[in-house]
Image (tube, rainbow, N blue to C red; front, side, top):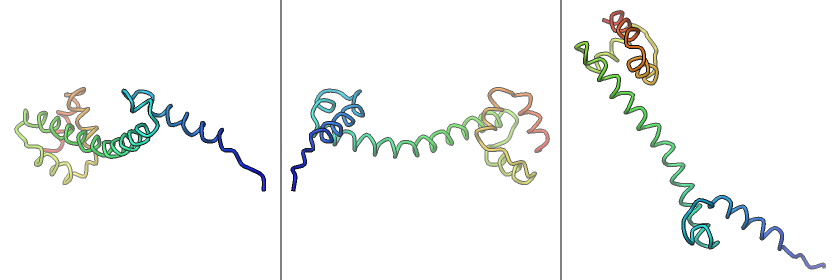
Length: 114
């Protein structure tokens, strides 16, 4: 049986790893053993924080809607309940954008809901 040398595959694997950890500091980008663990950790944090970002954005939209609605003497929960009763299906992102960028349109929405 002929001998198989795996030098090319070995170096390619290391090169691709180094490319992925390019912006890291110190040994985490230079040393293969440290780079592997750093990459695994970075990937797990990225996965987790993609979900955390969704959570925090929703909280932000809720705060913005609440602040806008309070000016007209309503609370956030009461406003959302009224929207549901009227059958207006706008998500929180759109409502928050309307409240911030188009207050006149938001006021009309409030009047139709009340």
